[in-house]
Length: 298
Image 1 (tube, rainbow, N blue to C red):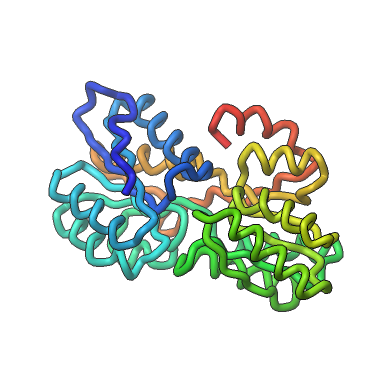
Image 2: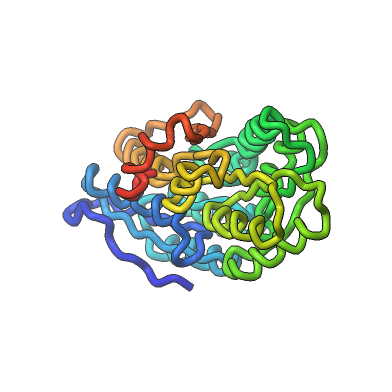
């Protein structure tokens, strides 16, 4: 389990908000979410405590601990709603406002959250599938890096809709990138008709490029989410595009929402998710994004 990172600025603030995600340690995507949440804490003068754990049961325990600490608000990524349901409902019952982020927008209101910030995964997947179809892809491997994450399943389903044919799912483990690379290479060697690989994580995208080379495959690689390797890959022509959900906003905006609710009972979104994506980053706009990614905000 990740150790608490401590306060994210705003040291004198009376409000304390806990951000609890399912990100794995060292995952560049979640580092940017954390950067957004902590910058919001600095800007708004509130205390932000960011913690994460990729195990759903331990993530639920972190929520329970935040409830026991009587924090003023909780932000939680909802990759596994069933595992977190009891803990989130206990927070709501205790009078602690909850904002969900990233995955699980369709379950957020049901669990009592005051709002959700993220992208609609099926819509984003549909956009990725359409972009691949426009590039001539017909047989797409969709690489799922976290078992049980409903958002990732929705991305692959949406990609099938956009592509106009079923993608082939491949389960890998984001915590074993070498194993992921081997699994992708093996799939490409076993089915030479695969002409595109869609990864759902920026770290997996980098090894997918290597896997294609290992397999002697000319399949194009596209991905969800950005990091510096993905940006370099787009600039080099090794990665066709990235679906950017602007995860800095998934950290920043919920802190704004919780502060507005705590001080003025404002809610945002009118019962609908606050969408942070999808946006497509490709050769046409990648150079403009590169410096922002280096600064940890994209």
